[in-house]
Image 1: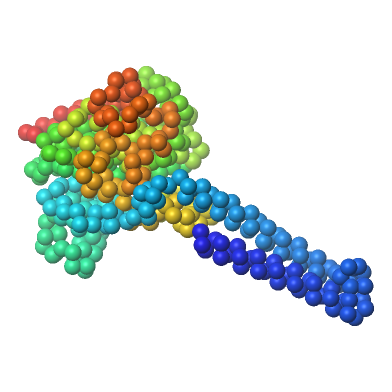
Image 2 (image 1 turned 45 degrees about the vertical axis):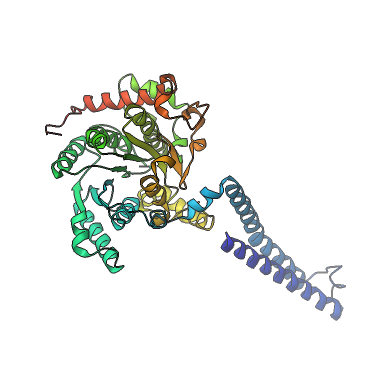
Amino acid sequence: MSNMLCLAFKWFHELEAYMYEGMCLNENDKNSGYNHGMYHFGQGQDKHSFRNNFIKSLLIVLPTFIIATLGLLYGLWRFSRFSEKSFWGSMQTAECVAKDVNLTGKVAIVTGASDGLGKETAKVLLKQGACVIMAVRDREKGDEARRWIIDYLTSKNYQPLHTLEKRIIMLSLDLDSLQSVRDFALNFYKLGLPLHYLINNAGIMAIDHYELSKDGIEKQFQVNYLGHYYLTRLLTPKLIQTPNSRVINLSSVAHNASPKPFSDWLNKHALLPQGPLKEEYSQQGFVEYGISKACMLLFAREYQRRYHDTTSIAVHPGDVDTKLWNENKWFKRFRYTFLKWLKYIPGEFKTVEQGAATIVYGVVTPNDQIKPGGFYKDCTYADDDIRKDMFLPLDNKDVNLNNQCNNDFKMDSQLWDLSERLIIKSGFDFNLPINQ
């Protein structure tokens, strides 16, 4: 914001210089007897020069002034919405959030750990002593990320090399394929490890054309939500067996882009069952992205209601400067023309280190300070930011979700049933052929 104001002031000085130049020209005219001074313009080049400079300055400065003023007002509005905790939380990094927290002996699965938020989250959890399972689609890219994390931590003398290499394990996971999800779960069970934290992070954003997954379901819906739903269901026995386990779903305020009311969309698609349809696909695919993130939000609540022995939350990491913005041509242009300016507004367009902070917050926050089934952003409980048609009508927000009436959770339960039917329809079940 300070840079924007400096730029605005600079252009105001240019306007002042143009005005001063025009006044000097007319003052010279006055002294030389031409055109009767600046109060009575005659014919000639000096008059046109002043007018051209004046018009030019207005064309340059006026739009800039309007944009800078709107940006300032928007920044003040954003600032007014922060609580003291969320304001500082929006600028925290994941390393700061996890500082002094000992995760030795804890096991975390991080999906999409080869890049962006997943990579940063894996790095921070490993630094704090956890054993991290990197769930990656591209093994070559995953190897590079794993090596980078190890090199980074050893270069900072956080952990010895031999210790790190034993505590960071890479397994293949392609959320585009339910068979790959099932294979990943089997491979994890074979490791014989507990599971303290399942971080459902991986995702894609705003595909500009309708595309199906390997299972014939709209790709964003499956990669962002349904694959994670299936993975979580398959790993539930491990989560229940592990004391104080948590499921952290990457949702987003982009759930606001989903159809409204969301219950109508669910009612329609639960009948067949089916995911987002080609004939309804939005031009940039952002509505479908919103649907997937809305589903992650509802899933976190319903999972909490059904399984009392674990804690499930949804988090919004913020608008983060990751490669997701580059996957869509329209968003790539939008990012470079607008979003980059939001870096100067606290908490508005975050670095990867800042974006991973709320994820890590969901891991390290003590049990008595975390709200089961809650929605978090900027390291703060933020259920008030859930769209009204998805917000549970709770009279007391401190009441545990497990004690609420089933009527409050009709939409959450309906999504659960739709997801289960989609997976069964694709030829899969929820039982693994191993001794759990």
